[in-house]
Each structure stands twice: as structure tokens, then as C-alpha cells.
Length: 562
Image (cartoon, rainbow, N blue to C red; front, side):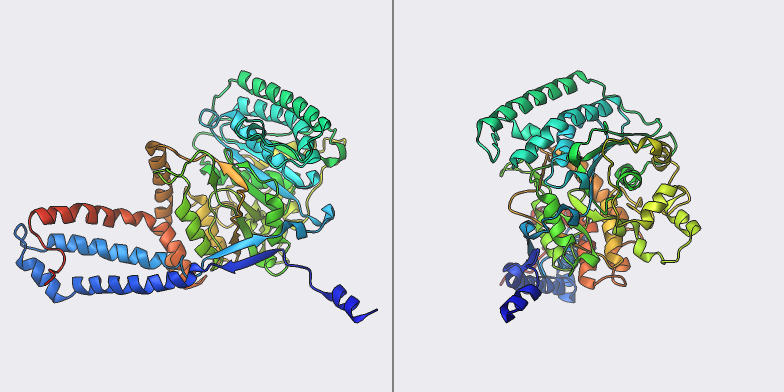
């Protein structure tokens, strides 16, 4: 064998991903320096005797420097928050992936479960939710390695019927997408006149097939329009149905599972965190894929290669051992460049690049892939743990315990059978509202129940446990959804987020106290800026209201220029 042949055989495979530090890094640090000098100067003035004497001498309304104190407090809070936010700008990065370099053999690709959450059919129309489900089933990934679970927190019969109709239509849609390699696999978008996307093939066969599938989609829409049930129940037993008719030809169709967890009056349900934990348990008993994707019901899969893009990180031996989740940005189709409420959340994703330059971004609600190993916390369990110890952590279900022992092994659907009927008793247990009691679900296992923003507290604890994450923002969005477009919805959304984050900031999980012993100072600052962001309201009101009043009454707040 020649030397060149040996070198070629021993050459390392090309990288699956690439990290680039943004060129704004130097500019950001220069800006920090200049801004820091200015802030130091103004605070020095505020806390020197000269400033206080001046305001006491020239205050006509108060015998004490009340306006001066209010403006000083506002500036101190503003300076403190500014310092925390500089952690985002320390090392912003951009990542690129090469999915074409993934192994060609389907056997080399791991399984993925997809979780779609819905709660109220009145606010979340069934047609939009089912389009999200169908787009997830149509992802460019082996059908026998993919399972889609929809959580119906409202326990609505209309949603269950819609899932059945979605399964019927998907048996025509999924093979059509894969045969012609469609770029857009959300049927509502594909068949819309505004986005007239074709396939890779322009033959008569393609157009004939397209016409047939479009007719089927029309029938699907009509069936959902007739399905008018929108009643939501808060007192109902668990319902799990696997949409499998036993004719899973060539394993082309992914698994589709409807899950409605049990709800009873007086029993806490823990909002979205509780729903996701039920999906984790139910999916563990059915498919047990080592990775899962979380989607909101209005966030459909726009780029079918998203799973393969995420696998460019999980199959990279250099980072996969410490990688917990891969976060994709939330992009929206109903916002414009003149969006006055920032529905596109642009600042969040700019800050996410800074997070990514440290140890990775937090969990941003949806559009992220996660490993079961990370969310279960199994690395903290000793290898010799007995059955009783595992049941104290994960509950009494034998199927759940078995899935923990086989956490890296996906269960595959057997063709021509209905293997999940025998599991119904176990699935009912896993979806019951009392299953969490006496276990570590919501505390050390699964999504944490401490606050309504379960994503933020869960991400914080995983980072403190040594896990890393990455942010991938490709030029073509992998997921598209709808955002708030009016003031009322925006205020309701921001209030909920701010309340949940402030819960973390005022608890023992305060990142500036809880974090430094478990992760780097700069990462703790990033999380501190995230949870304390609502404190901006104090300097906002102080600096917006007080200076005009002081100007009218001749009260000086700043030194005179000579």
C-alpha cells in the first residue's frame, strides 16, 4: 500500500459543524470600555459630596434630596443591569453545520421523538395544530426512527378526532414529500397560493400525484371544519392512542401518538412542564428515542432537514458527550419589518449568540432537541443503583425503569402489528396526575416545576450540572410560527415571562448566587441578566418621569456646564 493510500485511510473525517467567533467581538469590548468609563464617571459624581451638597442647596420643594436619590437609584440599577448584559457581548459566535457529511446508512442515525403541545382548541385552531403535526411527520429522516407525540392538555374530543384525520391524510402526504423531496412539507403552506412551492420533479407524474394529494388535503380540511367540538375539560382520565393501523409499509410512516394526561380538581398540573414530563414518560414506554424535539403547536417544521442539522452536533464525538440540547431560533411568518412590539424577538437571539460563546444558550421554550440522558439526570445515578432507588427517582412504572436502563436504545415498531395495546395499563399509569407524587419528577428529573417558565429553570440546572448547549441559526429557518401582533397579547406574554423569571431571581436559584459555584462567573452573569431583566422598569419610570418634573421646578440633577 502506498503512503498516500495509508494517509487517506487514516485521515480524520471532515467535521460535521464549524464554530466562528463573530467579527464584532473586538468592537463589543471597545464599546464596553468606553461605556464603562462614562458610567463610572456619572456614578462617581452621584456618590461624591459635591453632588449631594449641590442638590441639597438648590432643592426648593424638599428639605431632603429625594429627586436626587430616586435618580441615583435608577442609574445604579441601570448600571448594574448594563454590566450583567456585557456578558452576552464577550464572545458571540455563529455555528454552521454540514448535514451532507452525516453517515449515509440509516442504521447509523439515532431515533428522535417529537413533542407537540396544545391546550385550548379555541385559541389554537385544529387545522394549524395538525399542520404542525403533519410537518413533523414529514421531516427528512427515516420513518422508523421518528415518532410524533401530541399532548392535548384540554382533553378535547375534537382534538383527538383531528389527530385521527391527520393520520389518514399523512399516509398520502408523507410518501409524496419523500418521493419528490419537497422543500416545504407543511401542507397548508405548500398548497397556499402565496407560497407555490413545487417538487424537485416537473414531470406529468408529479403533477398528477400533486393534484391527488391536494384533493385529499381538501377533504382533510372539510373533515376538520365539521369537527366543531372545542370543549375543554379539567377533570378527565388519561387517554393515549397510538395511530397505527398495522399496515406500516416499509416503515415509511412515523409513529403518531395522541396523549391527554389525567387532570383532576385540586391536583396540580404544572402547566407545560407537567405536560412535557408526561410526554417523556409515555414516549419512554413506546419508542424511547435517545433524543427528542419540542415544538409549540403553531411552530411548524419549515426546513425538513432540521433533525439532520441537529445530528451534526450529537454525532460529533468532540462535543456530543457534554451536549444536552441544540436550540433553534423561533422565527415568525406573521411579523413585518415594521413590527413595533418586537414580535420577532430579535434581541433574544442576538443575546443567544453571546450565550453560545460561553457554554451555550438557555432553553427558549420550543424548537430545541434534547437528550433523554440530560433531562433524566442519569449521569448522577450510580451504576449499581437498585430498583428501589430508581423507583424513588422515576416512579413505580416498570416500563419507565426499563427505559432508563436502555436509554440509548430506541424501541422500533414491528410491521403489521399493534404492539401498544398491551401497554395501555402502563401508559395510563404514566399519564396519571398522581404519578409525580413521591418521586423526583419536576425536581431532579424532567422539567422543573419551580416556576411557570419551566424552560429557563431547567436549562439553568442542566448548565449547573456541567451540560452544554449550542445555538444553530441557519439562513433558512428550520421552524416558523406565529407571534403576538397586538399590545394586549404582547403584554400578557411578557408579564407571564417576567413573573416566572423573577420567581427564579428571588429564589435560591438566583444565578448570581446559585451559579458561580457550579458554572463560570460570566455564564452566571448571562443568566442573571436574563432573570433580572424586568428590573428595567425601575430606571425606565425613574428616568422617564422625574427629569421633566425637576426641569419644570428648577431642580438640578446633573452638574452645570461652565
